Length: 100
Image 1: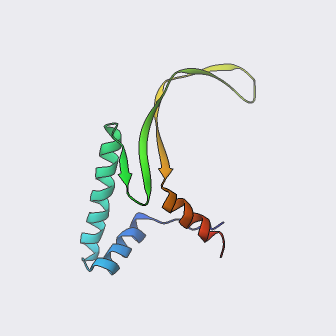
Image 2: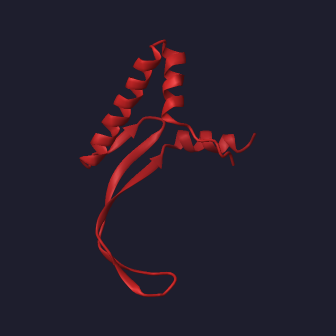
Image 3: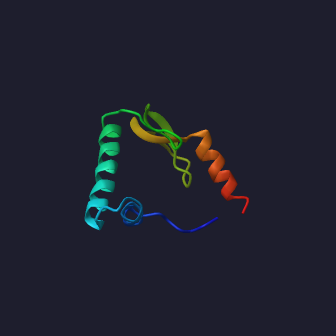
């Protein structure tokens, strides 16, 4: 599996090359999209991007966990977690990438 990571800068560079906005405008556009997604998730909304996947926030209730080193029981506070469910199209694209 590849160790490469796609960064914000690379995303804005791709927008710059594909759309023809300036580099600054491309970076601002990427930031605006990510901010909109982050704000919606922080409000507990679901973010669905067609042919890509769905980001959602799920509430987890309090539970008792265990320290793996000592075996001691530790309370785990209730919290909200971010989940991502890829679309079937994205799953197929990722799977096809494994067959090169």
